[in-house]
Image (cartoon, rainbow, N blue to C red; front, top):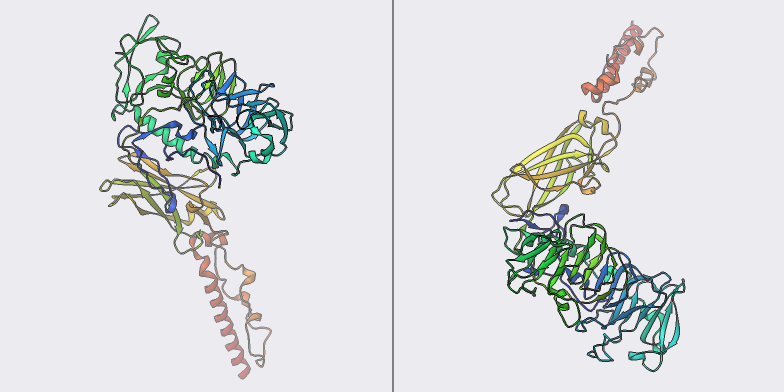
Length: 585
């Protein structure tokens, strides 16, 4: 079993909540698709999901800026735009006090599904600070790839670290691009050693989807004025200069990006504020943003030995942003962009962790690792109402509704309801796939005695209502509301648990006239004489006076054939009795 050397708590949450008394999204599963709610953590860190990596991409990473002092993880591919070797180092102009993650027990600078492209990587683990030991993990970190097919290894002189004084391993891909592992001795390292134990990056960074949901939900809660978990900073624009004031020292301070973007931010009225672990600075970036520029807080320098470490307590929240975002000049702070592609192209160095979809870099700026260390509160969150349904058809173990109609019972399991409060359930029968409304509905109102339980919604369906759906499947949707406000729904048009089938054929079909009993088919005694003038069955009354369609409408199709047969047999009996009397006379 593969492992990564830094663990993170994972939770499942969703975005878009009301401010008070709202709910956590659930983890685990109950019957009918209901999930139990999980308690929220007191504080959360969006970059716990990075598991120690400087940059994590849910897609691909292409690196072509000056260098990275840190590590990267890509769920997809990793590539370089530098034919001479993109530098992957520990410390040059950044801070050295960080650790590299370990994958399958091996310290790594790069973790990816596959190494592609024509550019090269120079993984030297260089350290200009003189603070890390030559035999440390940071001085000898390597690369781990899920796919090593097509890669070959060769020896190159000039090894450092564990390979000092000898040859190191050069890895070459099918396009001729190389990864120089300067600290991997060629004598005891081969390409197979670079292959990850697990079959996907998701196995090393598990639960990221749930982590994203939890983080986004906690961020929205943190911004809620009613909960008081964060502090809205006062921002005043005076002739192009922006003054900020009213900072808190015991909770996150929030500023909208649009209020300060491209402007000099004056700290004259900030009472000496500097972001800390207990009072981090969160910049809330709105949907539609396409560029991140420098946060120009007067007096804060990103230079080494100055205020560069403030990057550990500054975060840009791009949770509402999607699409391409240019990173041009941003120098201090982590970037949380789970739905966006980040394109760094700047001569200004950036400091902090990133989480995004696809990531590309270019320009002369560097990327320095600074682990985000702000304490972000999530608070206490009540359980969110969640429902799941399982449908059944009365009298059918295989959920088939007769064309004559019947009862369809939808058992709705619920979680997170408030006992003693009246809830309304509106059920609707739809068609699979497109979820088109059939017009068949049912309603139930109930008051739960406990937060978790179940209730039935019964549909009394007529043959006329299902006639046009003969032989087809139908699916039940359920909508839960309180006082007219929708609080939960279970509306999956492809959910088998919500699906039943209407029987095939015409409910009014019975035997055709040719199938009715005739005299010749009746077992008459062979010794009895017959007479050619005996009454023929055709002379007897016919079984019905209506058509098959009329039978279907009146419901007589199920009993008229029996009546008709009885009449024919009685007529036949009378004819035989007449024959006997004539014969005996």
